[in-house]
Length: 101
Image (cartoon, rainbow, N blue to C red; front, side):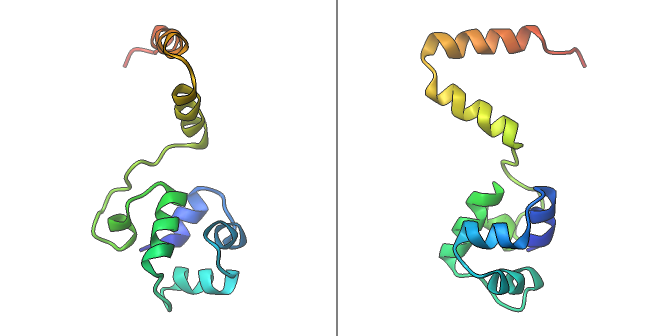
């Protein structure tokens, strides 16, 4: 589990992660250094925060799962909150501006 890489990729401080998962920065630092193992509850919070599976956190997956940027997450949330017509219009607009590979 490389929490430091996940944290730095998202430009977060140890304090920000500790606050988000509800522990002290000292405890979170120990998770990063792997001198302390997080409980399943903490693993769930870390998984949600970093957008990866618990399997990834514990080293059973080699590839991150579901890593969306904050912009992409905002698009998903907006799409979920929009009515059907707005979602359809937005999709058509984005598809019309897609660059060819």
